[in-house]
Image (cartoon, rainbow, N blue to C red; front, side):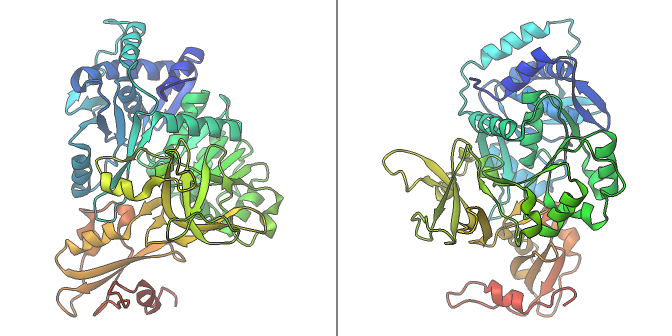
Length: 509
Protein backbone atom coordinates (compact mmCIF):
# COMPACT_ATOMS: atom_id res chain seq x y z
CA UNK A 1 0.00 0.00 0.00
CA UNK A 2 1.35 3.41 -0.93
CA UNK A 3 2.36 5.88 1.74
CA UNK A 4 2.50 9.21 -0.08
CA UNK A 5 0.22 10.73 -2.73
CA UNK A 6 3.22 11.48 -4.97
CA UNK A 7 3.66 7.72 -5.46
CA UNK A 8 0.60 7.79 -7.72
CA UNK A 9 2.55 9.84 -10.23
CA UNK A 10 5.76 7.85 -9.83
CA UNK A 11 3.90 4.64 -10.75
CA UNK A 12 2.16 6.25 -13.73
CA UNK A 13 5.43 7.72 -15.05
CA UNK A 14 6.97 4.24 -15.06
CA UNK A 15 3.92 2.84 -16.86
CA UNK A 16 3.01 5.64 -19.28
CA UNK A 17 6.01 7.96 -19.70
CA UNK A 18 5.07 9.13 -23.21
CA UNK A 19 1.36 9.69 -22.62
CA UNK A 20 0.08 13.28 -22.44
CA UNK A 21 -0.43 14.22 -18.81
CA UNK A 22 -1.38 17.90 -18.88
CA UNK A 23 -2.69 20.39 -21.43
CA UNK A 24 -2.96 24.16 -20.98
CA UNK A 25 -3.14 27.20 -23.27
CA UNK A 26 0.65 27.11 -23.75
CA UNK A 27 0.87 23.48 -24.87
CA UNK A 28 1.08 20.03 -23.35
CA UNK A 29 3.48 17.81 -21.42
CA UNK A 30 3.90 14.04 -21.07
CA UNK A 31 4.10 12.23 -17.76
CA UNK A 32 7.79 11.58 -18.35
CA UNK A 33 8.58 15.23 -19.11
CA UNK A 34 6.51 16.39 -16.12
CA UNK A 35 8.50 14.07 -13.87
CA UNK A 36 11.80 15.25 -15.37
CA UNK A 37 11.03 18.93 -14.74
CA UNK A 38 9.70 18.27 -11.25
CA UNK A 39 12.72 16.18 -10.18
CA UNK A 40 15.18 18.94 -11.03
CA UNK A 41 13.06 21.64 -9.39
CA UNK A 42 12.60 19.42 -6.31
CA UNK A 43 16.35 19.03 -5.91
CA UNK A 44 16.74 22.81 -5.78
CA UNK A 45 13.84 23.22 -3.34
CA UNK A 46 15.32 20.59 -1.03
CA UNK A 47 18.73 22.29 -1.18
CA UNK A 48 17.30 25.72 -0.28
CA UNK A 49 14.34 24.94 1.99
CA UNK A 50 15.31 21.57 3.41
CA UNK A 51 13.22 18.39 3.60
CA UNK A 52 11.41 19.00 6.86
CA UNK A 53 7.74 19.11 5.88
CA UNK A 54 7.60 22.90 5.68
CA UNK A 55 4.88 24.82 3.82
CA UNK A 56 5.88 26.21 0.43
CA UNK A 57 3.46 28.64 -1.23
CA UNK A 58 2.64 28.24 -4.93
CA UNK A 59 1.63 31.63 -6.30
CA UNK A 60 1.11 30.70 -9.95
CA UNK A 61 -1.92 30.84 -12.23
CA UNK A 62 -3.38 27.42 -13.01
CA UNK A 63 -1.00 25.94 -15.58
CA UNK A 64 1.50 23.19 -16.33
CA UNK A 65 4.10 25.26 -14.45
CA UNK A 66 1.90 25.29 -11.35
CA UNK A 67 1.50 21.50 -11.42
CA UNK A 68 5.27 21.08 -11.86
CA UNK A 69 5.73 23.21 -8.73
CA UNK A 70 3.18 21.17 -6.75
CA UNK A 71 4.90 17.91 -7.70
CA UNK A 72 8.37 19.31 -6.99
CA UNK A 73 7.39 20.48 -3.51
CA UNK A 74 6.13 17.01 -2.63
CA UNK A 75 9.28 15.38 -3.98
CA UNK A 76 11.38 17.76 -1.89
CA UNK A 77 9.74 16.47 1.30
CA UNK A 78 7.60 19.54 1.93
CA UNK A 79 3.92 20.49 1.62
CA UNK A 80 2.37 22.85 -0.89
CA UNK A 81 0.05 25.79 -0.28
CA UNK A 82 -1.72 27.07 -3.42
CA UNK A 83 -2.31 30.83 -3.37
CA UNK A 84 -4.47 32.95 -5.63
CA UNK A 85 -1.90 35.08 -7.54
CA UNK A 86 -4.49 37.87 -7.59
CA UNK A 87 -5.21 37.75 -3.87
CA UNK A 88 -5.36 41.22 -2.25
CA UNK A 89 -2.03 42.09 -0.56
CA UNK A 90 -3.49 42.36 2.95
CA UNK A 91 -5.19 38.97 2.76
CA UNK A 92 -2.08 37.39 1.25
CA UNK A 93 0.03 38.81 4.08
CA UNK A 94 -2.31 37.36 6.71
CA UNK A 95 -2.03 33.92 5.11
CA UNK A 96 1.76 34.15 4.95
CA UNK A 97 1.88 35.12 8.62
CA UNK A 98 -0.28 32.12 9.51
CA UNK A 99 2.15 29.85 7.68
CA UNK A 100 5.19 31.45 9.27
CA UNK A 101 6.46 33.37 6.21
CA UNK A 102 7.12 30.38 3.94
CA UNK A 103 9.19 30.18 0.77
CA UNK A 104 7.15 31.05 -2.32
CA UNK A 105 7.31 29.72 -5.89
CA UNK A 106 6.34 31.99 -8.78
CA UNK A 107 6.91 32.06 -12.54
CA UNK A 108 9.14 34.67 -14.17
CA UNK A 109 9.62 34.69 -17.96
CA UNK A 110 8.80 31.01 -18.24
CA UNK A 111 11.04 29.85 -15.37
CA UNK A 112 10.06 28.68 -11.90
CA UNK A 113 11.50 30.85 -9.14
CA UNK A 114 11.76 30.12 -5.43
CA UNK A 115 11.96 33.43 -3.57
CA UNK A 116 13.41 35.07 -6.68
CA UNK A 117 15.94 32.35 -7.54
CA UNK A 118 15.43 30.05 -10.53
CA UNK A 119 14.81 26.40 -9.69
CA UNK A 120 15.01 23.45 -12.04
CA UNK A 121 17.41 25.40 -14.21
CA UNK A 122 19.75 22.43 -14.43
CA UNK A 123 17.03 20.29 -16.00
CA UNK A 124 19.11 19.37 -19.04
CA UNK A 125 19.71 15.82 -17.96
CA UNK A 126 23.45 16.27 -18.46
CA UNK A 127 24.55 16.93 -14.89
CA UNK A 128 22.75 14.12 -13.08
CA UNK A 129 20.39 11.46 -14.41
CA UNK A 130 16.72 11.43 -13.48
CA UNK A 131 17.21 8.06 -11.82
CA UNK A 132 19.94 9.40 -9.53
CA UNK A 133 17.93 12.49 -8.56
CA UNK A 134 14.81 10.37 -7.99
CA UNK A 135 16.69 7.90 -5.81
CA UNK A 136 18.17 10.69 -3.69
CA UNK A 137 14.82 12.43 -3.28
CA UNK A 138 12.94 9.28 -2.34
CA UNK A 139 15.67 8.39 0.15
CA UNK A 140 14.78 11.71 1.75
CA UNK A 141 11.09 10.76 1.79
CA UNK A 142 11.61 7.55 3.75
CA UNK A 143 10.88 9.29 7.04
CA UNK A 144 7.65 10.85 5.74
CA UNK A 145 4.45 9.23 7.02
CA UNK A 146 1.08 9.02 5.32
CA UNK A 147 -0.41 11.11 8.12
CA UNK A 148 2.02 13.94 7.30
CA UNK A 149 0.47 16.99 5.61
CA UNK A 150 0.24 17.05 1.82
CA UNK A 151 -1.24 20.54 1.37
CA UNK A 152 -2.83 23.51 3.10
CA UNK A 153 -5.79 25.28 1.47
CA UNK A 154 -7.09 28.51 2.97
CA UNK A 155 -10.80 29.11 3.53
CA UNK A 156 -12.66 32.16 4.78
CA UNK A 157 -12.36 32.96 8.50
CA UNK A 158 -14.89 34.50 10.90
CA UNK A 159 -12.41 37.01 12.37
CA UNK A 160 -11.16 38.28 9.03
CA UNK A 161 -8.14 35.96 8.95
CA UNK A 162 -8.43 32.98 6.55
CA UNK A 163 -8.04 29.49 8.03
CA UNK A 164 -5.43 27.07 6.65
CA UNK A 165 -7.05 23.65 6.30
CA UNK A 166 -4.31 21.01 6.58
CA UNK A 167 -4.87 17.74 4.69
CA UNK A 168 -2.75 14.60 5.00
CA UNK A 169 -1.38 12.28 2.33
CA UNK A 170 -3.54 9.48 3.74
CA UNK A 171 -6.68 11.59 3.33
CA UNK A 172 -6.03 12.26 -0.36
CA UNK A 173 -5.10 8.63 -1.10
CA UNK A 174 -8.29 7.49 0.65
CA UNK A 175 -10.38 9.97 -1.35
CA UNK A 176 -8.84 9.34 -4.77
CA UNK A 177 -9.09 5.56 -4.38
CA UNK A 178 -12.79 6.01 -3.60
CA UNK A 179 -13.33 8.24 -6.66
CA UNK A 180 -11.49 5.83 -8.97
CA UNK A 181 -13.63 2.92 -7.82
CA UNK A 182 -16.96 4.76 -7.67
CA UNK A 183 -16.71 6.39 -11.10
CA UNK A 184 -14.61 3.72 -12.86
CA UNK A 185 -11.86 6.15 -13.91
CA UNK A 186 -8.89 4.85 -15.91
CA UNK A 187 -6.18 6.07 -18.30
CA UNK A 188 -8.66 6.56 -21.16
CA UNK A 189 -10.32 9.44 -19.29
CA UNK A 190 -9.89 13.01 -20.57
CA UNK A 191 -10.62 15.43 -17.74
CA UNK A 192 -11.33 19.17 -17.94
CA UNK A 193 -10.39 21.11 -14.83
CA UNK A 194 -12.49 24.10 -13.78
CA UNK A 195 -11.50 24.65 -10.14
CA UNK A 196 -8.58 26.95 -9.28
CA UNK A 197 -5.73 25.18 -7.52
CA UNK A 198 -6.58 27.01 -4.28
CA UNK A 199 -10.09 25.44 -4.35
CA UNK A 200 -10.07 21.82 -3.21
CA UNK A 201 -12.23 20.49 -6.06
CA UNK A 202 -8.96 20.63 -8.03
CA UNK A 203 -7.63 17.77 -5.87
CA UNK A 204 -9.93 15.35 -7.68
CA UNK A 205 -8.74 16.54 -11.10
CA UNK A 206 -5.01 16.54 -10.33
CA UNK A 207 -4.74 13.27 -8.45
CA UNK A 208 -7.04 11.32 -10.77
CA UNK A 209 -4.64 12.34 -13.52
CA UNK A 210 -1.67 11.15 -11.46
CA UNK A 211 -3.29 7.94 -10.20
CA UNK A 212 -4.98 6.72 -13.38
CA UNK A 213 -2.82 8.14 -16.14
CA UNK A 214 -5.74 10.25 -17.37
CA UNK A 215 -5.07 13.41 -19.39
CA UNK A 216 -5.95 16.64 -17.60
CA UNK A 217 -6.87 19.85 -19.45
CA UNK A 218 -6.28 22.95 -17.32
CA UNK A 219 -8.84 25.51 -18.51
CA UNK A 220 -7.92 29.14 -17.86
CA UNK A 221 -10.24 31.03 -15.52
CA UNK A 222 -10.94 33.65 -18.19
CA UNK A 223 -12.51 31.02 -20.43
CA UNK A 224 -15.39 30.48 -17.97
CA UNK A 225 -16.69 33.99 -18.61
CA UNK A 226 -18.05 32.62 -21.89
CA UNK A 227 -20.15 29.45 -21.42
CA UNK A 228 -20.31 28.68 -25.13
CA UNK A 229 -16.50 28.83 -25.36
CA UNK A 230 -16.19 26.29 -22.54
CA UNK A 231 -18.69 23.91 -24.13
CA UNK A 232 -16.98 24.27 -27.51
CA UNK A 233 -13.67 23.32 -25.86
CA UNK A 234 -15.24 20.27 -24.18
CA UNK A 235 -16.60 19.08 -27.53
CA UNK A 236 -13.46 19.78 -29.58
CA UNK A 237 -11.19 17.98 -27.11
CA UNK A 238 -13.55 15.04 -26.49
CA UNK A 239 -13.61 15.68 -22.75
CA UNK A 240 -15.08 12.67 -20.93
CA UNK A 241 -15.19 13.84 -17.29
CA UNK A 242 -15.85 17.21 -15.67
CA UNK A 243 -16.11 18.28 -12.02
CA UNK A 244 -17.71 21.74 -12.14
CA UNK A 245 -19.57 23.99 -9.70
CA UNK A 246 -23.37 24.10 -10.23
CA UNK A 247 -23.42 27.85 -10.92
CA UNK A 248 -21.29 27.29 -14.03
CA UNK A 249 -23.57 24.49 -15.20
CA UNK A 250 -26.53 26.81 -14.59
CA UNK A 251 -24.84 29.34 -16.88
CA UNK A 252 -24.76 26.65 -19.57
CA UNK A 253 -28.49 26.15 -19.09
CA UNK A 254 -29.26 29.88 -19.10
CA UNK A 255 -27.89 30.33 -22.63
CA UNK A 256 -28.65 26.78 -23.81
CA UNK A 257 -24.93 26.32 -24.47
CA UNK A 258 -25.15 22.53 -24.80
CA UNK A 259 -27.53 22.63 -27.76
CA UNK A 260 -25.10 23.34 -30.60
CA UNK A 261 -22.24 20.98 -29.72
CA UNK A 262 -21.56 17.26 -29.97
CA UNK A 263 -20.78 16.19 -26.41
CA UNK A 264 -21.11 12.47 -26.98
CA UNK A 265 -17.70 11.88 -25.36
CA UNK A 266 -18.80 13.51 -22.08
CA UNK A 267 -19.75 10.49 -19.97
CA UNK A 268 -19.29 11.72 -16.40
CA UNK A 269 -20.58 15.04 -15.07
CA UNK A 270 -19.75 15.60 -11.40
CA UNK A 271 -20.71 18.75 -9.51
CA UNK A 272 -20.11 20.14 -6.03
CA UNK A 273 -19.43 23.34 -4.13
CA UNK A 274 -22.97 24.73 -3.85
CA UNK A 275 -26.60 23.58 -4.19
CA UNK A 276 -27.62 22.26 -7.60
CA UNK A 277 -30.83 23.89 -8.92
CA UNK A 278 -33.40 21.29 -9.94
CA UNK A 279 -33.99 23.09 -13.25
CA UNK A 280 -30.29 22.84 -14.14
CA UNK A 281 -30.22 19.15 -13.23
CA UNK A 282 -33.15 18.49 -15.56
CA UNK A 283 -31.49 20.50 -18.33
CA UNK A 284 -28.33 18.39 -18.03
CA UNK A 285 -30.33 15.17 -18.18
CA UNK A 286 -32.17 16.36 -21.29
CA UNK A 287 -29.05 17.54 -23.15
CA UNK A 288 -26.66 14.83 -21.93
CA UNK A 289 -28.76 11.65 -21.87
CA UNK A 290 -25.64 9.48 -22.09
CA UNK A 291 -23.86 11.05 -19.11
CA UNK A 292 -23.68 9.98 -15.50
CA UNK A 293 -24.78 12.93 -13.33
CA UNK A 294 -23.48 12.93 -9.77
CA UNK A 295 -23.91 15.47 -6.96
CA UNK A 296 -21.15 15.62 -4.32
CA UNK A 297 -20.99 17.46 -1.00
CA UNK A 298 -18.22 18.21 1.43
CA UNK A 299 -16.29 21.09 3.00
CA UNK A 300 -12.54 21.46 2.55
CA UNK A 301 -11.99 20.06 6.06
CA UNK A 302 -13.00 16.52 5.09
CA UNK A 303 -10.97 16.24 1.85
CA UNK A 304 -13.27 17.38 -0.93
CA UNK A 305 -16.37 15.17 -0.57
CA UNK A 306 -18.24 13.16 2.07
CA UNK A 307 -21.73 12.65 0.58
CA UNK A 308 -22.75 11.86 -2.99
CA UNK A 309 -25.65 10.80 -5.17
CA UNK A 310 -25.71 9.61 -8.77
CA UNK A 311 -29.06 10.32 -10.41
CA UNK A 312 -31.15 7.83 -12.33
CA UNK A 313 -34.63 8.12 -13.77
CA UNK A 314 -35.97 9.87 -10.67
CA UNK A 315 -34.91 13.35 -11.82
CA UNK A 316 -38.31 14.18 -13.34
CA UNK A 317 -40.14 13.34 -10.11
CA UNK A 318 -37.79 15.14 -7.70
CA UNK A 319 -39.11 18.09 -5.73
CA UNK A 320 -35.67 18.97 -4.32
CA UNK A 321 -32.10 17.84 -5.00
CA UNK A 322 -30.68 15.54 -2.29
CA UNK A 323 -27.11 15.53 -1.06
CA UNK A 324 -27.32 11.74 -1.18
CA UNK A 325 -25.66 9.14 1.02
CA UNK A 326 -22.30 8.92 2.77
CA UNK A 327 -19.31 8.13 0.58
CA UNK A 328 -18.21 4.59 1.39
CA UNK A 329 -14.98 5.91 2.93
CA UNK A 330 -16.75 8.38 5.24
CA UNK A 331 -19.28 8.22 8.07
CA UNK A 332 -21.98 10.85 8.57
CA UNK A 333 -23.12 11.66 12.10
CA UNK A 334 -25.83 14.12 13.12
CA UNK A 335 -25.46 16.11 16.36
CA UNK A 336 -28.01 18.34 18.08
CA UNK A 337 -27.26 21.77 19.57
CA UNK A 338 -25.95 20.08 22.74
CA UNK A 339 -23.57 17.79 20.85
CA UNK A 340 -25.68 14.66 21.34
CA UNK A 341 -26.16 12.19 18.46
CA UNK A 342 -29.44 12.38 16.52
CA UNK A 343 -30.60 9.17 14.82
CA UNK A 344 -34.30 9.80 14.16
CA UNK A 345 -35.28 10.22 10.49
CA UNK A 346 -36.43 13.69 9.39
CA UNK A 347 -34.88 15.30 12.49
CA UNK A 348 -32.80 18.34 11.49
CA UNK A 349 -29.35 18.41 13.10
CA UNK A 350 -25.75 19.38 12.35
CA UNK A 351 -23.99 17.27 9.71
CA UNK A 352 -20.67 15.91 11.04
CA UNK A 353 -18.12 13.76 9.22
CA UNK A 354 -15.79 10.97 10.38
CA UNK A 355 -13.16 9.09 8.41
CA UNK A 356 -9.56 9.16 7.21
CA UNK A 357 -10.37 12.26 5.17
CA UNK A 358 -10.96 14.48 8.20
CA UNK A 359 -8.33 17.24 8.15
CA UNK A 360 -5.44 17.42 10.60
CA UNK A 361 -6.81 20.80 11.67
CA UNK A 362 -6.16 24.46 10.90
CA UNK A 363 -2.52 25.39 10.45
CA UNK A 364 -1.23 27.33 13.46
CA UNK A 365 -4.76 27.78 14.85
CA UNK A 366 -5.28 25.33 17.73
CA UNK A 367 -8.19 27.24 19.24
CA UNK A 368 -10.39 27.08 16.15
CA UNK A 369 -9.25 23.51 15.49
CA UNK A 370 -10.46 22.42 18.94
CA UNK A 371 -13.86 24.01 18.34
CA UNK A 372 -14.82 22.05 15.23
CA UNK A 373 -12.59 18.93 15.22
CA UNK A 374 -13.97 17.01 18.19
CA UNK A 375 -14.09 13.56 19.70
CA UNK A 376 -16.85 11.40 18.22
CA UNK A 377 -19.50 11.22 20.98
CA UNK A 378 -20.67 7.86 19.64
CA UNK A 379 -17.27 6.30 20.40
CA UNK A 380 -16.05 7.85 23.64
CA UNK A 381 -14.00 4.79 24.63
CA UNK A 382 -11.41 5.33 21.90
CA UNK A 383 -10.10 8.31 19.96
CA UNK A 384 -11.90 9.24 16.75
CA UNK A 385 -12.04 12.81 15.52
CA UNK A 386 -15.02 14.14 13.63
CA UNK A 387 -15.54 17.47 11.90
CA UNK A 388 -18.55 19.64 12.68
CA UNK A 389 -19.51 21.17 9.33
CA UNK A 390 -21.98 23.77 10.63
CA UNK A 391 -24.39 22.61 7.92
CA UNK A 392 -27.85 21.46 8.98
CA UNK A 393 -29.60 18.51 7.41
CA UNK A 394 -31.58 15.33 7.95
CA UNK A 395 -32.06 11.78 6.70
CA UNK A 396 -35.39 11.54 4.91
CA UNK A 397 -37.79 8.79 5.98
CA UNK A 398 -39.10 8.85 2.42
CA UNK A 399 -35.99 7.73 0.53
CA UNK A 400 -33.23 7.37 3.15
CA UNK A 401 -31.15 10.14 1.57
CA UNK A 402 -29.53 13.12 3.26
CA UNK A 403 -30.94 16.58 2.55
CA UNK A 404 -29.46 19.92 3.59
CA UNK A 405 -31.65 22.62 5.13
CA UNK A 406 -29.17 25.45 5.77
CA UNK A 407 -26.50 26.64 8.20
CA UNK A 408 -26.40 26.99 11.95
CA UNK A 409 -24.49 30.26 11.43
CA UNK A 410 -24.31 32.88 8.69
CA UNK A 411 -21.72 31.09 6.54
CA UNK A 412 -22.66 30.63 2.88
CA UNK A 413 -21.40 29.31 -0.45
CA UNK A 414 -20.93 31.69 -3.40
CA UNK A 415 -19.49 30.63 -6.77
CA UNK A 416 -18.45 27.41 -5.05
CA UNK A 417 -16.42 29.20 -2.35
CA UNK A 418 -17.33 28.91 1.32
CA UNK A 419 -17.47 32.39 2.82
CA UNK A 420 -17.66 33.61 6.40
CA UNK A 421 -19.67 36.86 6.59
CA UNK A 422 -17.38 37.94 9.43
CA UNK A 423 -14.40 38.24 7.08
CA UNK A 424 -16.30 40.67 4.84
CA UNK A 425 -17.68 42.54 7.84
CA UNK A 426 -14.17 42.94 9.26
CA UNK A 427 -12.98 44.39 5.95
CA UNK A 428 -15.90 46.85 5.91
CA UNK A 429 -15.21 47.97 9.46
CA UNK A 430 -11.56 48.58 8.60
CA UNK A 431 -12.58 51.20 6.02
CA UNK A 432 -13.29 53.72 8.79
CA UNK A 433 -16.48 54.97 7.14
CA UNK A 434 -18.62 52.23 8.67
CA UNK A 435 -19.59 51.81 12.33
CA UNK A 436 -21.41 48.49 11.98
CA UNK A 437 -22.07 46.01 9.20
CA UNK A 438 -23.92 42.80 8.49
CA UNK A 439 -23.44 40.62 5.41
CA UNK A 440 -26.24 38.39 4.11
CA UNK A 441 -26.31 36.11 1.09
CA UNK A 442 -29.22 36.49 -1.34
CA UNK A 443 -29.56 32.90 -2.56
CA UNK A 444 -32.35 33.74 -5.02
CA UNK A 445 -30.18 36.20 -6.95
CA UNK A 446 -26.82 34.57 -6.04
CA UNK A 447 -25.27 37.76 -4.73
CA UNK A 448 -23.76 39.11 -1.53
CA UNK A 449 -25.55 42.02 0.16
CA UNK A 450 -23.74 44.20 2.71
CA UNK A 451 -25.82 46.25 5.17
CA UNK A 452 -23.93 48.98 6.99
CA UNK A 453 -24.38 51.92 9.32
CA UNK A 454 -22.43 54.96 8.04
CA UNK A 455 -19.99 56.56 10.47
CA UNK A 456 -21.45 59.89 9.41
CA UNK A 457 -25.28 59.69 9.46
CA UNK A 458 -26.81 60.03 6.02
CA UNK A 459 -23.50 59.69 4.20
CA UNK A 460 -23.46 56.60 2.00
CA UNK A 461 -20.34 54.57 1.28
CA UNK A 462 -18.82 55.55 -2.07
CA UNK A 463 -16.50 53.41 -4.17
CA UNK A 464 -16.94 50.43 -1.85
CA UNK A 465 -16.03 47.88 -4.53
CA UNK A 466 -12.71 49.59 -5.20
CA UNK A 467 -11.96 50.08 -1.50
CA UNK A 468 -12.59 46.42 -0.68
CA UNK A 469 -10.60 45.15 -3.67
CA UNK A 470 -7.40 45.73 -1.70
CA UNK A 471 -8.65 43.60 1.20
CA UNK A 472 -10.83 40.83 -0.26
CA UNK A 473 -10.72 38.51 -3.29
CA UNK A 474 -13.18 39.43 -6.04
CA UNK A 475 -15.61 36.61 -5.23
CA UNK A 476 -16.07 37.98 -1.67
CA UNK A 477 -16.89 41.59 -2.58
CA UNK A 478 -20.62 42.33 -2.09
CA UNK A 479 -22.72 43.10 -5.14
CA UNK A 480 -25.00 45.45 -3.20
CA UNK A 481 -24.37 47.88 -0.33
CA UNK A 482 -27.36 49.02 1.71
CA UNK A 483 -27.10 51.87 4.24
CA UNK A 484 -29.29 51.60 7.35
CA UNK A 485 -29.65 54.16 10.13
CA UNK A 486 -29.31 51.44 12.74
CA UNK A 487 -29.17 47.66 12.86
CA UNK A 488 -32.17 45.80 14.31
CA UNK A 489 -31.10 43.64 17.26
CA UNK A 490 -32.36 40.53 19.01
CA UNK A 491 -33.18 40.50 22.76
CA UNK A 492 -29.59 39.37 23.49
CA UNK A 493 -28.16 42.36 21.61
CA UNK A 494 -27.01 40.62 18.42
CA UNK A 495 -27.87 41.89 14.95
CA UNK A 496 -31.27 40.50 13.96
CA UNK A 497 -30.46 39.18 10.49
CA UNK A 498 -34.01 38.02 9.81
CA UNK A 499 -35.48 41.45 10.59
CA UNK A 500 -32.77 43.17 8.57
CA UNK A 501 -33.42 40.97 5.56
CA UNK A 502 -37.20 41.24 5.88
CA UNK A 503 -36.97 45.03 5.60
CA UNK A 504 -34.74 44.93 2.53
CA UNK A 505 -36.34 45.70 -0.83
CA UNK A 506 -34.90 42.99 -3.04
CA UNK A 507 -34.16 43.45 -6.76
CA UNK A 508 -37.37 43.12 -8.75
CA UNK A 509 -39.40 43.14 -5.53
